[in-house]
Image (cartoon, rainbow, N blue to C red; front, side, top):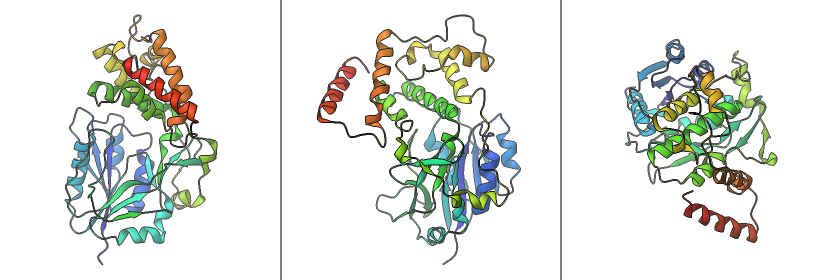
Length: 344
């Protein structure tokens, strides 16, 4: 069987904080890396162009739309001839280094066309010493057979997914998600996601948005594990620093939220869980002039009480939450009905 061309597909928008590390790692296992850049102004494009395996394409969209950007990436990947293995990763995601020598990776390379490859998805925590694992492996790979990609605007599949096609689920080679190494960056992104869903009317009520975007932030200690040395060793032996992560004073999602405030006002977003930070301070950090009350917390006393209750009960809605008692289940059901009636 002819070995497939391994192509990494990655969307980028201002990922200079981690892009060099990502490309150094991906260059070890990918034959080609397709980067779709959406107007980066932090040096990401220059970093990408310095790697010989990178094909840089422009994502001209002015809005966030996952399906459109994945189509761009897949179409560019299909310009490479022969059988193709597509691996769709964000810039803060890394195949574990054992992929460089694992028999399991060789199994991936021999999968038949149309196979979806699922990887364990590990959220890496600050210090890059520990992680927690998503309950279900995620679809990051596809042995390309030309299938049309059908995604969604947000949180959709990154690869073509055939309804009844073969699926290969890995257990040793995983995807390390560095989203957790900088908790402030992570929270900034989650706040922006909530604002996006509010403006685009995805159908999720404010309480549902809270539940969805906080389920990753509550993980019991029993689910946190030490990173196996094999996950990092192959990269570190090649001189790649896998542990140093520099924080930032301001993040791009904060800047985008400030722009939304200027366009729509803050009251439009008062029911979202984004008021755990001082937006006046964030405006100053981004060089935005602040004249008075424009970025103050617009929540009412009731709004604050609801957010407090959502926070206290969030463990029951998280990946590894405790099983609620009968009384707790009933009380949660009643409270949720009340919130729904209140527009939450």
